[in-house]
Amino acid sequence: MNHHSVNLKARLRRHARNSLYQRTTILSIVRKFKVFAAVVVLILPVYPSFGQMAYTQSSVGDYDASSILVSYEGEASDEAGSSILATDTGYLKAAGLLASARDVSGVSTLIDYTVESGDSIAMIADKFRVSPDSIMWANNFPKSKVLHPGDTIKIPPVSGVVYTVESMDTVDAIAKKFKVDAGSISNQNRLAAGSELKIGQKLVIPNARPQEVILAANAPKRSTTTAPKASSKSAAASGWAEYAGKQYLIKYTGKSRGFVWGNCTYFVAMNKTVTWRGNAKEWLRNAAKQGVPTGSVPATGAIVVFNGHGYNPYYGHVGIVLEVHDDYIIVKDMNYRALNEVTVRKVLKNEAAIKGYIYVD
Figure 1: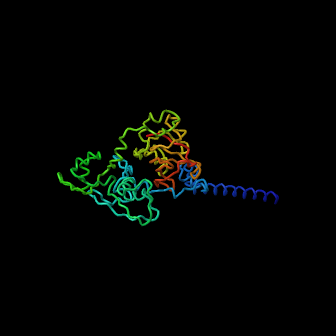
Figure 2 (figure 1 turned 90 degrees about the horizontal axis):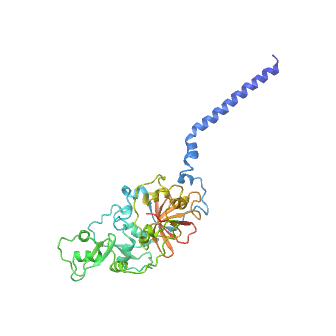
Figure 3 (figure 1 turned 120 degrees about the vertical axis):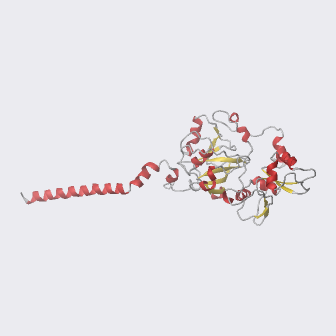
């Protein structure tokens, strides 16, 4: 055998060993990083929060912190999965969430609160777990009231009104006047059965509204509210007329309906009857396919759909409309700024990112 033949065989053996080593090295790398590979291949496309890690924030994809009125962690705040709004009144619950240790049972005194920089009535209301209206009423504020740092305002212990006893008043008569339970008045103000009220005495009436608000609500009048424009069956026929001009009462369903924990779709599905699937930006189309009313007019209780213009253009975003005002809406959502964080935000009606509304209970 000549020298050339021996060298050729040696080269072939070295090549075989190198090829085997390369294949072994590639397989070892795949095995080593199989968890990462599974995340990239299987989880990343379907889990929005992971997907956003690979999404570079720019002028489209940034959140607006100035729009956030209130925020809290979803799991820590919605105790036992309940809504943060009281089921009987729609007001924010007292002695819950941020002030979970605050016991307001049998409390009839008001708190003097000094306004701090950045405070708003909505933020203060959430801090003390009462409705914004209750603070407005307790201080006789006009709707246009603007708070300034250093202002001192009164905070009622619970949502409702503060009433000054008049001549001939009784607990039963006051309860009838405000359309509330007499027992709740007695319990909140620690009144013994049959106790005599004194003229000028201050009482906290839980879950009540001022007389002028009750009278205005009961007065017959021509409706000036524009009904939502439905793309399918009539929104009015679906009962949406009853929500006009009111603060929406969130109805906790407790059904995530398969949406991923901590995301906006999960939160909305837990609080609305969502029967369709897809990423948030697809909800308008998917809901309409099922005959659910959709449109472009904001309504309290509607699901609002966002996409682009500050929201992730790949997944989109959804929230629930709590209130509708002349120029803006109040939206409650999750994962606007962080996973599992619930935010209450002020959003302009003409916001370019708003793609439409879904009118569903």
